[in-house]
Every structure is written in structure tokens, then in C-alpha cells.
Amino acid sequence: MDDLLTVTGAKRYSDRVLYALWAVFSVIMIVVAVHDYYRGGGASLWKPLLWEGSSMSFATLLLALQRTIGRRSYDRWLGEPSKWFGHHLKWFPLYLLAFLVLVYGTRNGVYRLLGETYNHDAWLVLIPYEAVKLLLFFGLWLGVIFGFDSFARWHAQQRHLLELQRALAESRIATLSSQLRPHFFFNSLNTISALMHMDVERADRLLACLGELLRASLQSGGQELIPLGEELRLLELYAQIMLERFADRVTVQWRVDDAVLRIGVPAMLMQPLLENAFKHAVERGREKVRIEIAAVRKNDELVLSVRNTGSSLPPDWREGVGLRNCRERLQVIYGAAALTRLSESAAGVEAVVTLPCREPSA
Image (cartoon, rainbow, N blue to C red):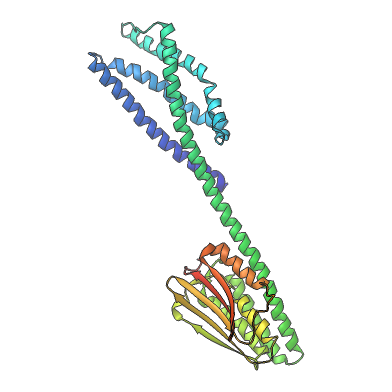
């Protein structure tokens, strides 16, 4: 239905412009005819008005027929100009006959009513002359009409394509998010399951924390962008769950500029980055690990990072599900304006996300 309204709106706008152009053209043709008549010594205004007015009235009738019957029949050939013009021009002999009968019949009739005789060239001379003139006139305006209709169709197709691209992007984001959240909650529940046999009180706290995280994540799940402050609150809930399990083996530090808390970011963007830090540095090692989460603004870009000690990238390292989803979500929303980078140094591994500063979704 929306596509139909888009196409109809484009056609209506095209028609308004075309009719306005035709009205201006008709007035100019009549004014020129009157001017030429008086310059040639004529004295009766009604004569040039009748001559040119009858011709322009017939041409207006042809235009109206093309915008109604011709459009319905031949618009499907706009993508093939030769067929479009061919289907219109095949009716030219009928148009010529109708022009001679209606226009010259009208002129003769008006002259007789006014007691005068309408003189014109012999029919053997007049018919070829009017045929050439009408063909040139008809071809010119067919070209104008084809240009207007092709532009209107292109405009409608562009709008339809943009709507399809947006719908595809939204669908892709939803798909990526659905892959991310079950993976995240599955790992969290495994953590709680391990604690159930060792410390019921801590497991209970983790369940309460996970429930709060689930509620908050569901509230933000329908939005493309949420304020960074809300994203960090979700991230802190996840960190609390992991700290309960690895309290003696990890510390988490937050370095966040308060000025960036209102900038919009994709929901649950940083969680897989923090999850990777716990998975590769804390779970697989025995030394105490320090994780630093930072968010700063650099000009018109927001830079988010998760840095951890105690791990390195193996030679055969491949991008996992969480990081890949993070990268693909950013590509869908921001295109080439967002970057994801994973690097290592002597101090450990750092994941950095750089994205444009935008307002959060309404």
C-alpha cells in the first residue's frame, strides 16, 4: 500500500508540472499567432484565436487521452523507449484524421456562423503539411512526456529501494541481535549453574542480577540506538555476574567521560567485547587479570574500548561470533563510518570500536 502511494504521489506531482508547462506553452502559441496576424495586417482578433485555439484544444485533448488511457496502457514500456514511442505513434494516422475533421470542421463552422468563408490550401497540399507539422509537434511532446514519466518512475523506484534497504537493514540487525543474546544468556546461566553447588547465596544474587539484566535488555531491544549510559548500565550488570564468579582473579576499572553518556550506541554492543575478555583472559588463566572499560569522545567520534591483561592473540586466531556480530551490526547501521579493531601488546589485548556520534533512537 505504501509503495502504491509513493508511485501515485510521484505521478501526481509529474502531472501538475506537465500541465503547468502545457498551459504556459499554449498561451505562448496563441500570443505568437495573434502577434503574427496583426503584423500581417489582420484586423479581426477572433480569427487567430480560432485558428490557434482550435489546434491547441485538439492537442489538449490528445494530452488528456495520453495521461489517462495511454498511461494505463503503455507505462509498462517506460523501460523500453522504442516500444513506448512505437505504441503511441501507431495511432498517429487516426490522430491526423481526427485533427483534420475536428479542427477544420470547427473553423469552417465558426466562419459560416459569422457569415464568412474559411479559405485554406487545397487538400492535397494541406494534408501533407498538417501531417508533418502534427508529427513534429506530437513527437516533441511525446519526448517531454516520456522524460517526465521516466523521472517520476525513477523517483518512485528510488524511494521504494530505500525503503527496502531500510527494512533489510532492520531485519539484519534483528537477526544479529537474536544470535547475540541467546549466546550471552546461555553463558551466564552456565556461570550460575556452576555456583549453585558451591555458594547458594552468591548464585541467588547472580540470578537476581541476571533477571535485572534480562529486563533492561528487553526494554532496549526494540531500539536501534540507546544512550551510552544505558548501554554501560547493562554492561555493568554483566560484569557483576562475572565478578561474583571470579572475584579473586579479576578487577574491572571504568574510565568513562560523563559527557558521552547521552550519545547513542547499538544496544548490547560492548557486551561481547567484555565477554571475550573474561573468556580468554580470566577463565583460561590463573594470574590476576585487570580489565579496563573506556569511553571517550574524539571530535565527532565515540571511541569505546575493552582492554585486558593476561591474554594474547594466538597465531591461528579467528574472529568469533560475538565480535563478528558486533562488526556486522556496526556496518549495517553506520556503514564505513564505524570501525572495529582488535590488537595486542605486551600488556594484553584491546578491542576498540569507533563510531560516529549520534542521538539515541526515539
